[in-house]
Length: 43
Image (cartoon, rainbow, N blue to C red; front, side):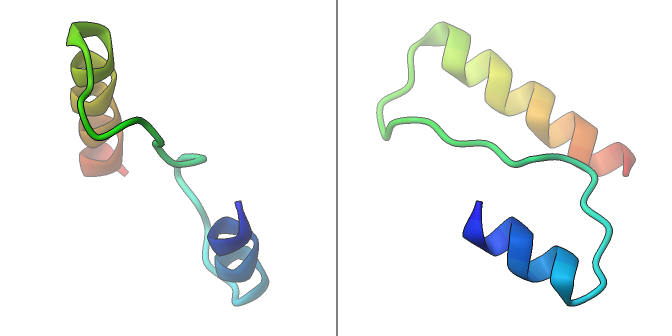
């Protein structure tokens, strides 16, 4: 959250709020990480 706020105040346009999970993700978390990466790649 703090990094997002700093980037926005510096004039960056954020394409996503970010992704945050534990070190040992379950299957659902892995899928969410892949989906997050795809959103970033399209931005």
